[in-house]
Image (cartoon, rainbow, N blue to C red; front, side, top):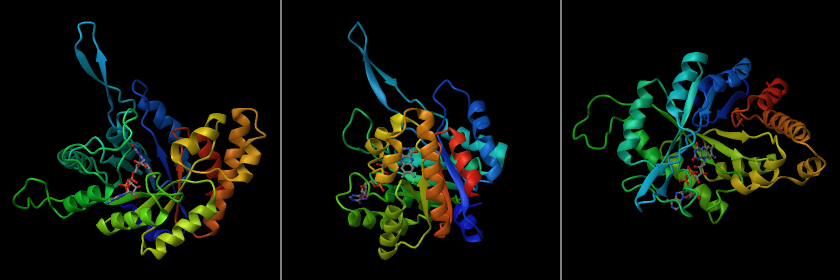
Amino acid sequence: MKINEYIQQAKETLFSYEILPPLKGQSLKDLLEGIAPLMEFKPQFVDVTYHREEFIYKKHPNGLLEKVSTKKRPGTVGICAAIMNRFHVEAVPHLLCGGFTKEETENALIDLNFIGVQNVLALRGDAPKNEGKFTPEPNGHEYTTDLVKQIIGMNNGKYLHEETETGFHTDFCVGVAGYPEKHFEAPSMKFDLKHLKEKVDAGAEYIVTQMFFDNQKFFDFEKKAREAGITIPIIPGLKPITTLGQISMLPRTFFLDLPDDLMDELEKCKTNADVKQVGIEWAIQQSKELVANGTQVLHYYTMSKADATYRIAKEVF
Ligand code: FAD
């Protein structure tokens, strides 16, 4: 079933979460067993991130350069199939502009349709670590709006090089990303919202936000999005902080602020266990306030470690 249909039919706040494919060489079995306890809370969907292929050039003693893939987390599509088969839950693969030509995107969407995926989260992706600026593939998409248009085109039976309609069309519900603290490249929130509206006008049916730790930022973002004419569901993304390292890593990586009240508590922590306790309590508080505010779905960034999300869900759902 499609996510927009689940939301339309929901009588209370829905639960969903995101996982990462395991590192190359690690087993799918461990990942599936790890997330199994979360099924107790009947998630409507599980997102599976996509990690683009990055290449480095290794120089051999003979002077020749070898192109080597550094892809660390392959397997998004296979994991989606496994989740749907094992748990009978919608799996939502993330689909990137970066690293894909339009033809490769078309083929990937056909694969996803064939395995029964009905929802995709369309994203641009970031520049590879050794490049400063995002560059699309030749004949790839520069912005997510164009990727959304391609997916909706396929839903309408439009294929890239088919002169005539084949009669076969996909039927994806498309989600896109939104940023309560603004996307880091956007010069202003107004600019970012204008382009978010373009993704919606292109056919996106729901928005999942970047993580945030101050609910007021989400409420302000939602209000501004509504004022900008965006009417589709906006799903808040929440991440419990679980390690000392994340206190500096999360703001640096995701361009967000940690509120003073949260930092006051985190600064007292000496161990990862202390941080995790504070992070879980904070996320429970955030979740309860969002539910009280009528939020339709709560979406958790588990980073494939389900125990913190389990403890939050136990209190909230
Ligand atoms: P876009 O919507 O294309 O926007 C990118 C920037 O361009 C924004 O600043 C926007 O304001 C601007 N812009 C948009 N259109 C135009 C235009 N026409 N002209 C000028 N400027 C424009 N990354 C991964 O690699 N894998 C994942 O699995 C993944 N999952 C994610 C899940 C969520 C919920 C979120 C919030 C992010 C995720 N990301 C993932 C990160 C994401 O790929 C990056 O944040 C990326 O930098 C932007 O993606 P986007 O789809 O928001 O881009």
